[in-house]
Length: 84
Image (tube, rainbow, N blue to C red; front, side, top):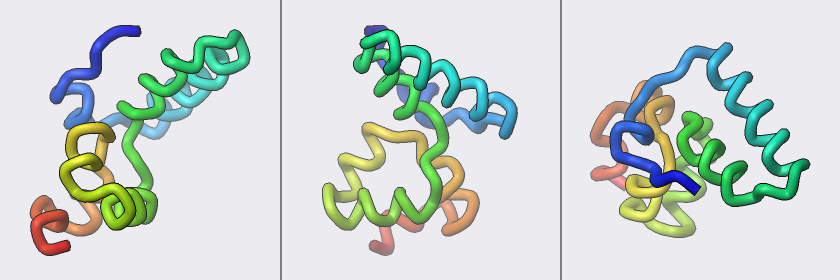
């Protein structure tokens, strides 16, 4: 499994890119490569409402370091996690 970088988690993707990434994650999962599927899903922008749930359950530092939260930042503002 390749390493996820900070740049991967900060990148904004188009809807078409997200669709292609989801398809690739599904293909990897169906092929039995769950690590690759998970890696792809973590770099896809997390839906904002999911980001809030993950931050509440696991904490803001876990969310920041493990998922792409660019959509949540666009919706809630760049400092939304600091106000949680």
